[in-house]
Length: 67
Image (tube, rainbow, N blue to C red):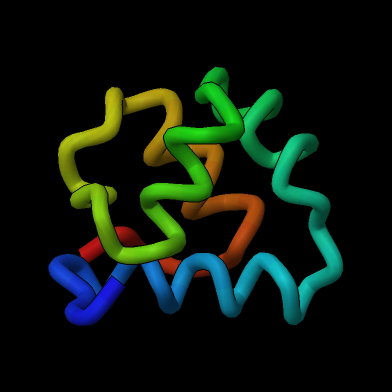
């Protein structure tokens, strides 16, 4: 990918890796498909468009906001 459309997603991926949380586990906890979470972390998907539960789970697990 040449450009990152949603840099906030890339930051979420970096935070997840820093905390040592497996992608599959976080996707399961947030009721997301792992591929969607991969796309989000690649900056291809806007994290603000996730359903409310997923946003809450991600924010809590990663101790961050999805702004």
